Image (cartoon, rainbow, N blue to C red; front, top):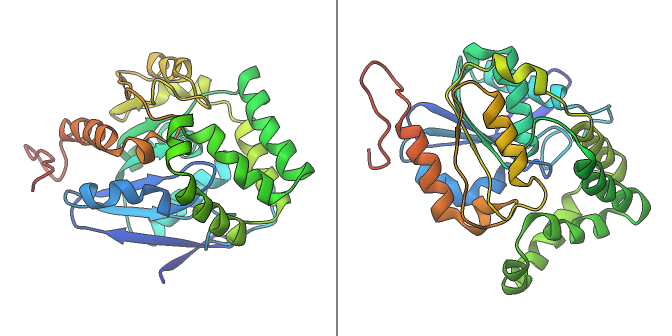
Length: 276
């Protein structure tokens, strides 16, 4: 089971495939396994790296004050430990916030990036939605927090059709969860997020996307990111909620690969091909 030491934490990671490095950064749940619907297809083209954030999964559940900047620093530390000078990135929600920090402060490390279901700042809607999640985890407990999460992530019809599978996932999530204080600190981290003033410094080719029915990060967040990031491309997924990479993987994977095909990698003239 692969781990690397990053500062004062052990970070669990997995790598699949061969080719240019592509690092997938998950959202608030923090688990590398979130990307299971993408691994098979993306690893035909890339060496795909996934990892559990500090405070989640099999990585160290550090009792620290969490911040998006800390988690971004952990990602750079993971790259250093694995001798990855630069990579392509795909970041969801909190992962997209981490990418904003990385691409604006370490531009040489980012070959291209997909910012998926994320935002550049906190507004009153975010304070309402994420503040409610914090109240649930601290006031009711981890089990209630886990069981309420699908309402924020998935379309209602998808939840109804996948209730049995979601129940299994919830049981595993409760057993492996960090304590409420860590979950609350991670929620505080995204509630403090504000990278609006730094977005103009991003140099990497950038695709901004989310599902049109994303409840947790509605499309106006993506529109703002694309407006402020130089030369960013904006394209929406037709449906699938906040976690459309899970609920609508065919459309999501096609969009991501189409973007990456437009990015030259591995030397002059080489194009990324999904069937290579």
